[in-house]
Image (cartoon, rainbow, N blue to C red; front, side, top):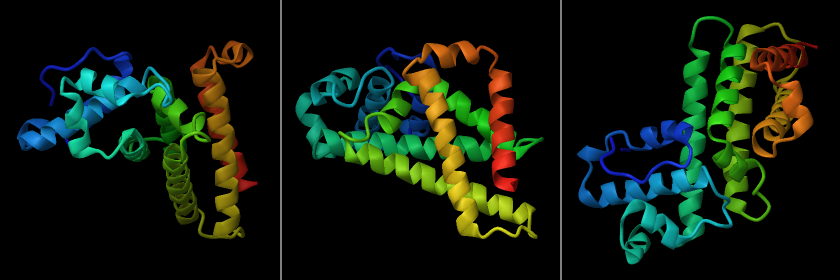
Length: 222
């Protein structure tokens, strides 16, 4: 999608990693597609700092530097727009984790470390997925896709490396879903809802990473 010229200041500097990904190749696009991309980037930045409920078409257009009516040339309404931003964010998360899996060392540890980093750097966008799902079915769908596709990836990778496993793919999928749910709940408490007790227990990020890695290993093997 899109390299960036002028743009609104980002509410969260870390969220610029996702914005930069969206902006790859922008300058080579036709004018209309550049405008569409600018709207998506504006939405990504806004959702890094505010809730889905507070996202408005007027706010997106102001952040993107376009007229209000321009929005409706590209998107039918706010929900369709937000759904596309979140679907693209899911794609970004998966690409980052797959890249981490190819790094030297333990793929499980590397991908868990990448997910922790993405969760922390994009807490606002993750909140849209994991907290705001009931009021926004498109967010729920995006989060379910992320969970399903990553659970499938983890399970099939585990089976490739453990060909003699007595457990069925369905059983391993259930375990991966359960383990992923525990990780999401913990990271939500740590980075999104700011649970003071979880934060106090998580000052050493390496210890948290080791805990998650151990949980994945034991949960899939036991």
